[in-house]
Length: 190
Image 1 (cartoon, one colour):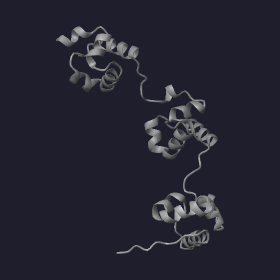
Image 2 (cartoon, one colour):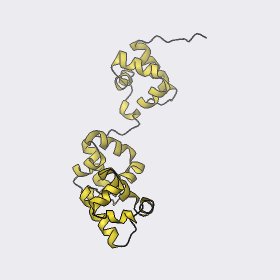
Image 3 (cartoon, one colour):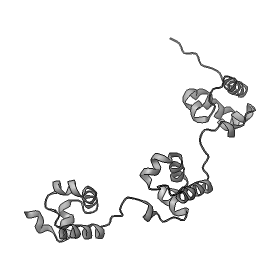
Image 4 (spheres, one colour):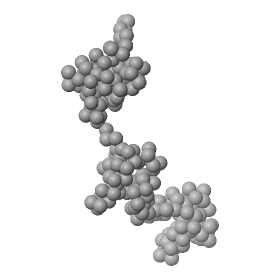
């Protein structure tokens, strides 16, 4: 079966955008890129981009745009607003609740944490994940030993201290190496 290809021109792109608008179909860039990639491509080729093509068709793209445009200032203002409302800002919650904001923050600031800091907030007080280092891991191992936690088998440790075990393996290469660094290797011989 032979496939029919449409020949595009600047006028054809503008005409098709007006046709889609008259039919009440979504004209935001993401939708058009998925539903009519040839039109999106032709708009870039003949008019320099989708927004310019929509403007050439006599439409206001700001009214069509589905996604919020997140400038650096808007990102910081929204973070401060959420913090002022007492909303949780740790990354796991933010990714579920403020998805567009988190994505924009990552693009504009490099990460959600950096955007939080740029907003003047202390991310160490907001985030839920613990900062690990070799020193912190050794201190935690010794504390757990003093509390009587069985550190001799990784199976028990994984059940009770999964995050510590993962950090120890990441920083020391193995659980045994972390235990040696904490001078607790004698416990491994049990």
